[in-house]
Length: 299
Image (cartoon, rainbow, N blue to C red; front, side):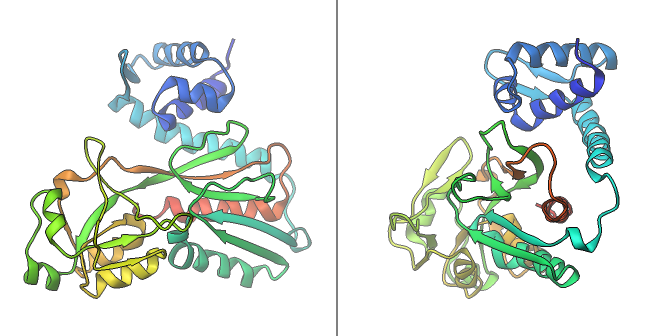
């Protein structure tokens, strides 16, 4: 019989995955075990935690309130057992290999990593920016930051938040060419595009109801998200950019969102590490610092 701590871990995994089958795959247990754990937890709480039918699983308001408390409690318990004895500076020595999407590099990761390196000179930080999923074994990756589902249930995974995709333009661009009312309007307006570094094709733009659109003749294209942002900020065209890259520009009014009613479902942002069991202090430090940073961002 599951103890209450195990039930909370299964419940949080079910919320993160969005359905019981994927949660079971991630945890290495059967979907029936996830269902039983949720049912027992619902009986203990006296509340329905998920709306369930044959097509989808949706967390309830009571479930959303519980998962916030559960994650906080589980994190405290994990830190209690992971921390062990106080860490000395001598233990914070050696290489830590990190992989992340390209657009998170300079603006999100580098400020955190440089601060860590200055505080702990013995750290050797190795950052690889790649939009493809890295082979953590072959490439000897210690920590990964990714958007979307992490399929390997052997990893230690922590969900950090959501990343939204916004179609944006400068106020000056909008004054010059107008506001698109539907995605099809983009075909006759200046837009930017990101090239896939593997094949040179343009990445598709995503909209609600699983609709996609690929720029045919962008006014500016690049394989670097930072450069695309610079082009959008210069008024060269509308672009679809992730919230982590543009939140500050939106707050300052430097960029204006358009086609808001067509915004797609947000993507999950995760940090993970492939190593279970004892973790070197240097890896735990970088992992926890990055997790705290991204959790505090308004994604």
